[in-house]
Amino acid sequence: MSVIYAELNEKDKCLYDAFKLYDIDMKGELMSTEVMALYDDIRFGGISLQQVQAAMEYTCATADCCVRSELMDLLQELDRRYFLIQDLRWEFSMLDREMKDTVTAERARWLMQSVHGKFFSRRKWEKFINTRPVSGSGVSFAEIEVELCNIPNIMDIEDELLEQQKELEEKEKRQKELEQAAQDERKMRQKQREEEEGERNENERKRKEAIHRIEQESEAERKRKEQEQEEEKQRAIDEQIRQKKEEDDERKKEQEEAEAVAEQQQKSGVNAEQLQQAERQAMMAENAEKEAQEDLRKAREKKAKASDEKARKEAEELERKAKEKEIENRNKKLRAHLKVAIVSEDKDQLEPAIEDFEKAKLSDPDMDLDKAKLILSMLNAKDDLKKAMNKRHLESLEKAIRMVWRLVPNPEVQLASEMAAANKLLLQLRRLERIRAEILELKQSTVAEIRSYSAPPVAVQTVMIGTFLLHGHPEKETKSWKTVQALVGKTGKEGLKRRCLEYDPDNLVKDQETAKRAAELFKKYDLDEVRDVSAGAATFYVWATSMLEEAEMRAEAAAEQVKEEMKEQKSKKTGMNKTGSVKQGQINMSI
Image (cartoon, rainbow, N blue to C red):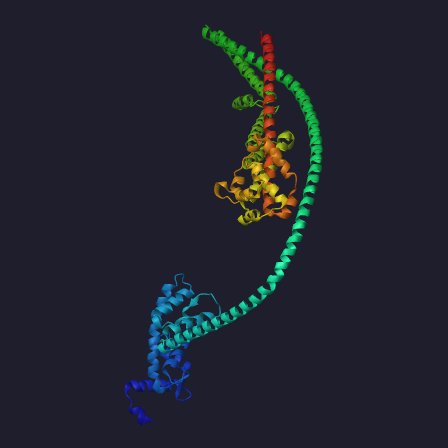
């Protein structure tokens, strides 16, 4: 053995010594872990066990051990892998933009293809992806470093391609055979069924047609008679209900008007008396102020003409007293003007009276300033509420109601009638907004369902006739279902959904005849009856009845507004007459 060792050159001696050093069991071969330990001592950081095993598989006769004669080739292969890893790790870090030590599967595949080029094996890559412990997670460098360093075998690639081609051809052949057999079987069975069913179907069809024709005629006649009877009964009931409702409404309206007139007369009498008293006080204070100003003027003239010290002091005393009297009477006048504004509840008087009172910084033991501000806030809130109600805009009305609650204490008492009307209108506007949202969200498939009827249910046809009647189509035009189908099928500006969203109920206020006829059509059915046969028709039923209700409310509101304006004009005229009488009396009293 020593003779053999002596004949070796220096490089072989180093390999011999290294092999012997790590061959602890003296077996004449190194396992993968021993090779890994050897290489760790050669290169800083060493190399992974998987890389060592891959290198041994590539260079050694047996993949699980290395004999001394194979050590040099194995070390060279390990060096190749060691330095290649350094470069590949840098490439991997360039792909790892998020610095997570992982990259996406797509980037990892790109790196693999870049390294192996045309020898890249798609099957191996798919196998690697499918056998990963956590599918879909990022790919680390350790997972692919071995395959990156492996030298592709062109024979394996060619075998893989041939195998894929063969499998594809076999699959196509089997598929064609199965399809042909199935097609032949289907044709044969189809032919038999057609021949057997043909005769049966023809006989059955003729029998069913005859029965159906008889039943349809009988059913149509029965329904027609029942509908006529039901409509006659309903018309009689509706007429009775309408008459009773009109009588009840008229009585209630007359009673409310009588109560309102009595209350207004009582309130006007009290207010007129208070107003006269306050105006008298204001006039007296104003006259007293003028007298004090005149006394002040005379005192100043006397002071200017004083010839000695005694006369000057007397004049100064007179001037001081006149000045105090002027201020006292001016303050009385401001208080009286504020009381007049409070009693009259007139914004045009309240605003300057409050401003003058605050500017003078007067004491307020009677809390008149707070009363005036409260009345002014109530009047402003009331006016804003009326404007929002006339505007009939949901957001504006909600804002006005919130402002009333913020400015007016206990508004349900202070502004009872206004708040009741506002809340009623608020519920109506919210309902209209909800219905617009339902129309907007109405699916085209639901609209298409209405159009798809060849012979629609009577309820559906009635609802659609009423709907298009509101849109200006005469009833005689929509009696034909084909016309309704054409109208439902239109899109763009003429589309039914868009026309419903842009509809203005004022059209019905101006055309009461159309509103009345449409109401008669929709009274024939309730919502549940329509919904049972068609969800789409039910949506248009709700929309149309809501538009009719909104038009009715707008007409009532317009009439009420006209009545309120006439009442207000009459009240102003009466107030002017009373004020004129009071002022004339004050003038006479002053004279």
